[in-house]
Image (cartoon, rainbow, N blue to C red; front, side, top):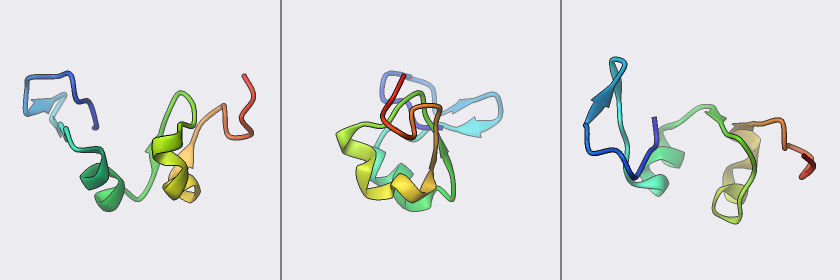
Amino acid sequence: MYEQALHEDEIYHSRVIKDFDEFKKISDMIVANRLSDESKDVVDKIYTRGSFSKD
């Protein structure tokens, strides 16, 4: 799980990653609310309802 604001190292038995570049590198699939400029380099890994840049 990527979440830069959490202070815990684990949540629901999942490791919390605070560095998005590390998260992108180790993830096979990313579930996101929407695409962002920061995630466009891994768009093939992302599942989102905003996949087509529409809400």
